[in-house]
Length: 318
Image 1: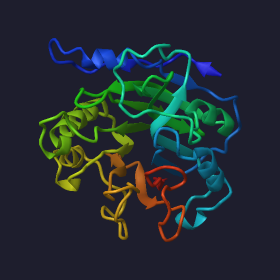
Image 2: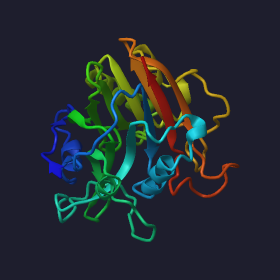
Image 3: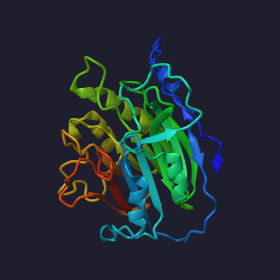
C-alpha cells in the first residue's frame, strides 16, 4: 500500500531568486510505499547495498535485482538471503500528482518512450520492496519526474526529502532509517549537480561543495550509508570530497579499490558514483564495494541499460 508521503526539508533560497520554487512546483509528491507484510529471517549481521544511477529509468532494475536473488553475484559476497537496500539516482516516476502542464522549469532533455523506462513505484511493487521516493525535477513537458529513491527488503522509517541549495538544477536527496533494533542505520541517496551556471569555474565544483555541506548537515547520525552520484568532475581534488572525508565518511574498505577506471560508462569515463560509510559507534565491522559489469570486458553502449555502472556493497555488522 502507499503510506502518507514524507516531509520535504526545503533548502534556503537566495533573496528574490524564484528558480528553486519554480522547479519545486513542477514536480509531483513524494512516495512512501509499504508492501504487504512478509516474514523475514532475523539476526542478520550483514547487509547488501546496491547504489545506481538508472539514467532516468532506463536502467533495468528489476532484471538486476532478479540476478542478485538468483545468486549471480555470490562470488562478491552477495548472499541472496541477506537483506537488500537499493539507493537509486535519476529514478523515473509517472504520477497524477505531477502538474498536468509544465511551467517551463525542467531539464532541456526531452524524455521519450523510444527506450523502455521502469517506473520506480511499479518496480518496487513488482519486487515487493519498501520505497521512499523524492522527486527532484520534471522531465520536460511530459507528466513524469525523476529523483532519488531508497528501496529495501526491510521496513524504512523516519524518512525525509532533503532539498539541496539551487545551483544548476533542483536536487532533492532522500534519507530514511533502516531499523535494525538497537543499531539503526541512516540511509541516504543523493545526486549532485553535474555542472554549474554559465560562468562558474571548474564545472560546478563550488556549487557541489555548497550542496554537499548542506546534505552533511542533514546527516548528523552516527552510522550512515550514502549512495550517490557525486558528479566529481575533478575527482577527489574537489572540496565536496574533502567535506565528506572531514565528516568521517569512508569509501568502503580498502579506501582505494583496484581496477576502477570509471563508473560513468559514457565519455568522458570518470568515477562519479560512490557508496560511502560513516560509523561513529563501531557498528560496521567491514565494508567492500564492487562495480558491477554487464559485460566482463566492459563493452557495450550501456550497463544493464544505464550509462552508469551499478555499485554493490556488502556491509558486515558487529
